[in-house]
Amino acid sequence: MAQIVEQVELLVQPILDDLGLELVDLEYQREGRGWVLRFYLDKEGGITLDQCAEASREISAILDVEDVIGTAYNLEVSSPGLDRPLKKAKDFDRFAGQNVKIKTVVACDPDGRGRNRKSFTGTLDGMAGADVVVTLKEKNAVQVKIPLDQIERANLEYEF
Image 1 (cartoon, rainbow, N blue to C red):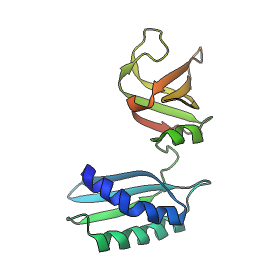
Image 2 (image 1 turned 120 degrees about the vertical axis):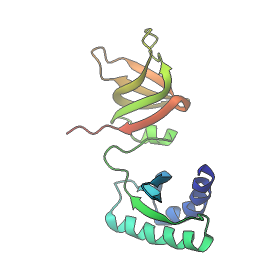
Image 3 (image 1 turned 60 degrees about the vertical axis):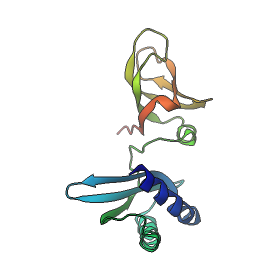
Image 4 (image 1 turned 90 degrees about the vertical axis):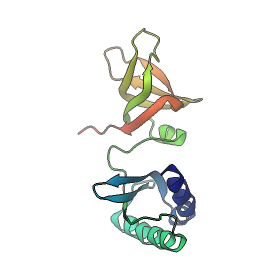
């Protein structure tokens, strides 16, 4: 499956670049009785429904021609939503100042206080080298550095 995702991403990236869209995430997975190829797209200022529809038409056309997926699948194209995933270093810099929730692969002690944990919630401060910097939402508002390669999942945390 990872190979299919890589091939699809290589095929589709030039189209997304032409449309001025960013590929936030791409999933290819079994759901129920079938397969789903799901694109999460965004752009500065947000993506519209019309832009998702246009991207869907373009993506569908290139995938039909290239035929890289040998089984039937449903194509879904949407925005990443309010809880947008953060994956690349540039994402962590772009959304500095926003609330974020991060889960690490293994428990770590990024603030050196002897408290190993896997979940961190706070204000994203950006990148420092290969580390994601977050000011935790705790009594002391401690700033921690989490190695990017140790992050399993990171999402914006929207407050109502």
